[in-house]
Image 1: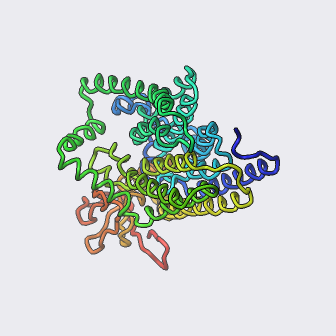
Image 2 (image 1 turned 90 degrees about the horizontal axis):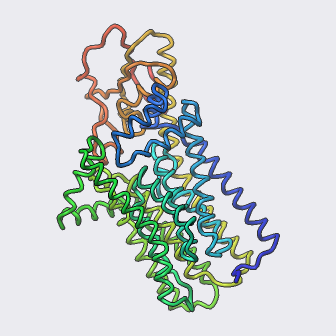
Image 3 (image 1 turned 90 degrees about the vertical axis):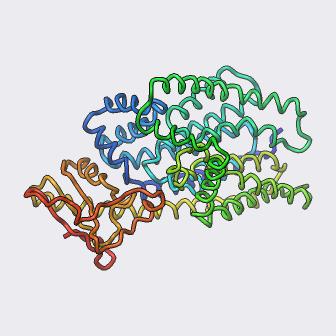
Length: 492
């Protein structure tokens, strides 16, 4: 039974609104996204070594050998230039929108797809949507929604094709960016809790959950065997550090502290996120419970929603490293994906029958505007970092064309350069190399200037050295000083 009577006008209106929404999101992406951190490094090394670097580096991150796939895409799309990062991020955001739209199509939730797909594209609260360095995570989220779509279809009927699609999607996530591992585990639980009124028998619910769980569990088992085999060979470097740090979670005290850190990072560092998530969820609930729902039932649903949102930070416990659990950009990645699943649950469990389309679309437009506006606010913050880096690059290249230097030192009197997204050392060297200037670039902060590096301090990690601690400049060194004049960054 089709819960939403179709008409050509309603269908056309939805298409127009979805196209407009996507165009606005694309505009925000193109306006705000550029390389800021390790994207400069990956562009530089791929320019030097080509795809050979992908194969050689995969051996060093054996647990995530496909991690660099997203960076390869950026490099290929831009021919080694920075705009490839912008194109790559734009492409994955659009793919995420359509992946979610496709995933929930069998649920017959009609025009609610517009809001849910927008949520999937923006990923409320997650700044990483607009950061090129998180494109591996962004690409993994596309495959997550593909896995969700295959799983939903498996819940309806077993199919080797859909099971294979789910296995491949989950495999890509585990082999590239495992931040959504706990979100994957949530997928088979959904049929058990989202049933509509007059729902199917519990026996059928369990069958649906098992059909969804089988390919996901199989892939986890195969990956677990792969992990054990690779671990026996003694993995070195980044992956080994992460794995070793997780040993503290084996104690109750260590696990409790880790959980506390997840909640502090998710909901305390950004105090507006929790009320905004509740507002969006309650707004969707109100639209799905317009008819034949008692006040008692609505209040019950609100309590369930509050409980789900309260549990979302637990999805970030996949980050076992202390440094990562304090990184809001990593923690909010699975939280934002989990919130999309929560909203799908709200719609699936509570959507009504025939609804006045004028009321529905008007309210949906308000929700979509709020979601896109929240994304714009995050993108605006990223754009400010991009503006600073662009000025440093532009003025540094201008000076290097005048002076024949092999080394450039920038003494920062503003205290702002050298933070994570304002050329954390040694990223400036890579950025200049992308533009053809192979020089050693150093940003330092004088002892008389306080470092204003809030992102680096949050972890904490080291940022700029003190200028007085640097070795005496050689003849081929260009020394510049960064000033803030009338709010503008100037290098002299």
